[in-house]
Length: 174
Image: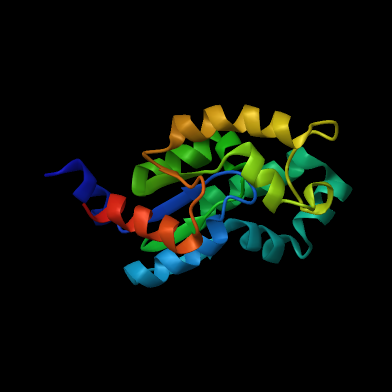
């Protein structure tokens, strides 16, 4: 069987990438295209904890936010869904191992320059990061992890939402 066909046969697609990469937006559209349900792990965390990601980070620290994210990655039923993960999902080895075992993991790769134009609320967005960590430092640290876990990489540089969706569909269905 063609390795690419195996991606779509898994019937679960997980999107990873930096905050601002478009995981939630693309995820909803991809779910519609594929006829799958949609799960946003950031929303799952917020619903379970009863507060925003930023409130969790402010009150309990970024490591607590990462722990909650890992719990969601390990406990949510992701079968037959497009899953938009939080940008820090890749810090959880056990969470990512579970996702890779039953889903096609896709890295939405966006350049630092483009992300900086998109993410204007870095300090208040609820991003799991060390307090002194800059966006550029976070980008550099996470790029390695995204590449490590991704089965597919979509270069989203200079692409609109519809173009990213088309590129993703082409990769998943070839």
